[in-house]
Image (spheres, rainbow, N blue to C red):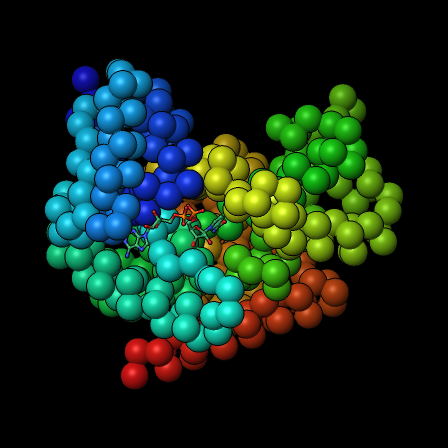
Length: 331
Ligand code: NAI
């Protein structure tokens, strides 16, 4: 039998946490033959709710779940973890300035970086979900210098999956037949959902999305804004932010990272930029990646047209600006 993998979920008493932990305990993230031990962290005001989640995990009698640590102690939470999904953070409240939210999250991610660096298992893989996701991940990287930069990522898979969903609805095809969309840049409204290399598997072979949709105005307009603003549309409809789709995307992100992407398929991940595609280096930027043997690689050599170039640049500029704002909060 396989040794259990320890998976940390921070903010586990929150609504994404509530959707995410049962998925992990059912094997959705790491596979149906991989036992897991869940580490759940939240803050003291949420301790009672966190304990309620732990009670439900016991009640669900998940065969793969070999243990649960539910705690408000960040050291206990981080000790020995192989995968860390960082969902906890300070939400933007009405009337708060961007800088105030940034400042709260920068201090959370700075201290959690140290705890992970000192107590997580070697080679722990980190996925930051909490917003501002790219910049929280960057701060985590900066303050955990002994964790390799390649082990620190942020979630743009939800945006990627939203783009697949929109194409599948538009063309009335199965979402599993659509692939290779790209989310470039920041997990924010400046993200660029790009379909220029996306394809659909049809009875007569693989066809470019652009050829099938035959509506460039939609692809260059409404499609992009729908994906960019989908989070806000969900809040409007549900009066709560996306949780089940975010949790599912977090599982997809880790599963593909650990177990590999299928041949001929790439996915979007926020990773530490090396300046590929002339994105700013030294920020966490979402790129198309393939994964093999537990490591991601940015897909190289894709043609970028003028329309796309502008969009890659503007989301990159926003990330550079967020980085500066984050640093100004530290000093
Ligand atoms: P939520 O407010 O329901 O849950 C957040 C949880 O984090 C709460 O239980 C809170 O007590 C906890 N928390 C706060 N500070 C913490 C700390 N220092 N350590 C540990 N836990 C802490 O929020 P929800 O809906 O679960 O969303 C969580 C985050 O995910 C938000 O920042 C949201 O903006 C972000 N998000 C990101 C998405 C993405 O695609 N990257 C998609 C959807 C949400």
